[in-house]
Length: 221
Image 1 (cartoon, rainbow, N blue to C red):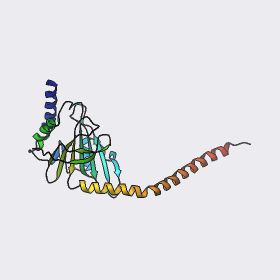
Image 2: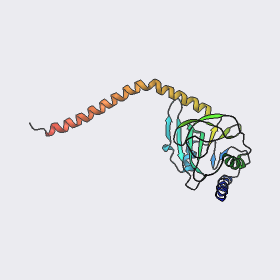
Image 3: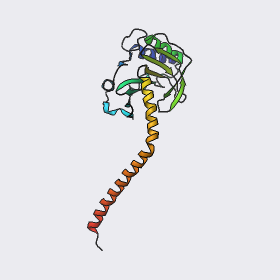
């Protein structure tokens, strides 16, 4: 019981120690402004914007950057997703060890101290978990305003909670762009295979010619 109280207090403190916000103000998560761009998030996390992973390049540029606060933090990792350089999603994966024993209600109560009273909708959303596995999960609790939606979820194969933050303005645009990119990938796959074979053949021919030239120079019948 003492250990559980300490864990609850730890999570409460990790949230209370954020920049002071009015209850229900969803404009920030910790020190991150939710209207940030890739350059700003990279600067705050000590990363180079060029380190962002490119997920899709057309019809819109979709990129992802990850950051791990530290082993003692309630958060294990944050995944930031960008639509043409603008932040549209944050996946806050909590650390299974520093939140061990916490119930969903414990997390809801701690989060509500910062963001106001939670909604408990009957809703499911499809997300990618910490290890990239896409899954349809139940929304345990939700905090939202006109611009952002915060959703507390728990993936089946993960042992802690995740807070999924979405831009209402950009998330739909990003999802549409991602779906179109996947369709383009399917349509372009045959041509990409042909182009790759041509590149491979040219590379093999160049390597063979290099070996031929070297062997010809030293060949003595």
